[in-house]
Length: 83
Image (cartoon, rainbow, N blue to C red; front, side, top):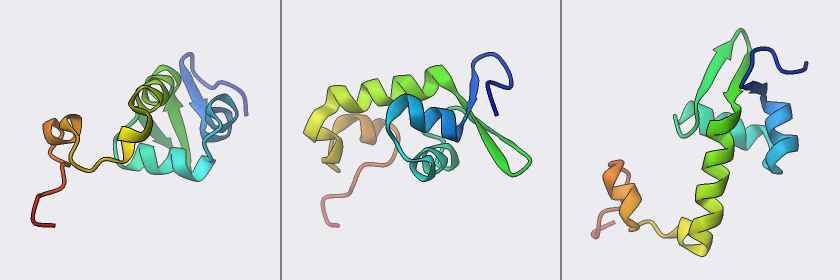
């Protein structure tokens, strides 16, 4: 399946573009971390949204694994100190 709508790609195309697995891209879509639409049983992914997510993760480097980082606090996903 090639690009269905301009700017929207399949999870398989997203995986080829980013090196992420299709399962990981689906998880990002389900969790709302990237722009995505469900089309029947398939997901359509916002190409620019996926690329922006990849750029953010690359910029964070090893800090992407820090559960106390500031951007998670703004999203309400920051780990609590007593966890």
